[in-house]
Length: 253
Image (tube, rainbow, N blue to C red; front, side, top):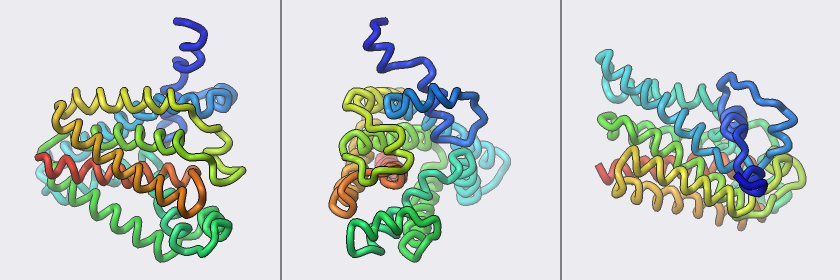
């Protein structure tokens, strides 16, 4: 492997991605994670595969025990939220509060930085959970739906990160830097490949288009409202892309 390829694809990147995007106990050297920063984002679909598989396993286990599709989907949601520490849900709520709760860019960023949740955030979280839950009920016979949505939505998150400039001078996303197009393209390739293996080419194509549409919508709103991306914006992009993926898979099924 050439030096340039080594700089782009480091063997520690998957563990760095798992350590950043989940609450799973992985041992990652803090200095290495900081040094890699945004360059490790090519591996973000891999923790997505892990998270989605855990959620699908919980749903399948609940169904096997005799619970109904609604309860099984609810338990799967609990697992997804616990494994990720509600990281992406928090970003969605902050974006909803900031984008529609402030009249200026500075006020919106100030609201997004506030740890308290407002009416828009509560509504966004409630609607997102409802859409995810209902889609998971509809897709309860498919164990691949959650992993497919999880990997594609994390690739979409990386694409938004690479496409937009940072909206603020501080925060997690700014501290990690901004990825070039290469990590985003690699993440997309990994996610699409995994989706095709898990769900087949047709369903993977539909879910990929849906994820891209969701990420594009979030990116356009973020650029119009705050002039770029932040950690919260990427969390919102993941959530919206995942919902779009699940809805497309429901239609496909």
